[in-house]
Each structure stands twice: as structure tokens, then as C-alpha cells.
Amino acid sequence: FIVASFVVFFYIHDFHHTLKKPRPGAKGVLYAVPSKMQPGLNVMTTYIDNNGCNVFDDGGKILSRFPGRFCKFIPRMGLLTSFSNKISLLDSHLNPIWQHEAEEIHHDVTVSIPRGEIFYLDTRLHAKTHFCEDILVGLKFSGEEIFRMSITDLLPAMKRITGGRHDSTPVLSNHNCYLDPTHTNSVDVVPPGFEERGVFYKPGNILLSVSEQSILIILDRKSGKIVWSYH
Image (cartoon, rainbow, N blue to C red; front, side):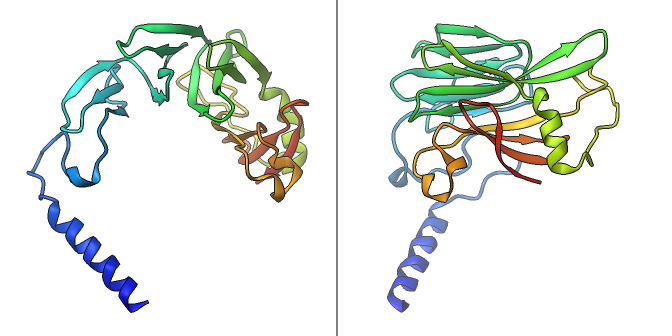
């Protein structure tokens, strides 16, 4: 234990002293330890302006900037980006391989490498009533749509679970919604290796965080029903 503690201490001490104190107001790469880095490019998403996707090298030089609220490298496939009502897969020259049209991509896009799938949250505005409907959409890495369902249709089931304690107050949102009863914030796909924890952890099932109902749910992939919840 003592030997291990010394090893950890000197590793942290060595790492700390390789870092240079950044200049006040400095931008770009503030710390870099070449011996602990792997070659390649980096992707960062910002919300400062419309050019949210930034591709830069290990020296912090920005090689490309383009519109996007979500950017992720998919190994041996390309760069996946989303912006407003489009999801695109780009090649190494940032040319579109395919493009998928949505209504209004909302908050989250997730990539399941083991399954070769992409899931995103879409928002449909019903203009006459200013009602926002959350929609869950799944794509293959080829861009083919494989899954679509209304999360808002699950509202009665969620209310039965929570006792209906989380009805949203009508407020005009940035989607021009007065009624936004679900406002789903996050989506993920259950990966392999969790089956022993319960049947609801079946690989491919879908985990959602539904903000306005203050609930986490897992959906059965085939039936679309809620098989697990936490609130």
C-alpha cells in the first residue's frame, strides 16, 4: 500500500510539474503533455455561435469550423453532426455521406457503436395549440430510419407512475411551445453486459430522461412500453 501510494504521488507530482500556468485570457490548448497524448484530431462542440463544431489538432490549431450542436467521430465511418433539423455523416473531407431531415433536433443525440445505431430527440410543434411533442428517432449508421415513436404518447403511463405530480406550467419556450409536458433531455441505448441486473437492461433498450415529468425511464425496444422507471 505504501509503495503504491508513493507511485501515485510521484506520478501526480510529475504530471503537475509538466503543466505550464496559462497566461491570463489565454485561449486554445492550455495544457499539453505530449508523452501522454495520442496522435489524431479532436472534436469540440461550443454554443457560442452557429459554428459549434470545431475540429482541431493536438496543438490547438482549428482545422475546420462548421454549424453543429452535436459532433462525434464514428470509427471507420466519419464525423456525425447535428444542427437544427438535420443530422449528417461527413467524410474525412467534411463532405456529406448522407443527410437525414428532422423537425427540430432537441438536446441529445446518442451513438451506439456496438449496435451501429444513432438515436436522437426530435420536437414537433403543433402550431394551432402551441403544443410540443417529443419524438424518439433511431437510424442505422447508413442513415436508414429504423425506429420512430412519440415520447409524448407515453405521458399517461408516466403520470400513473409519478401520480401526476409534475404537470408543466404553460410558458413560451424557445420552440414556441406553451404546452411542453415531457421536454425529454437525454437519450441513451443500453449496452451489452448489463443483462444480469434485470430483464429491463436488455441490450438495445432505450433510456430516457424526461425533464418535465421528473422521471427516468427504460423503454422495451420491441414493444415501446416502459419497463423500468425512477422518479
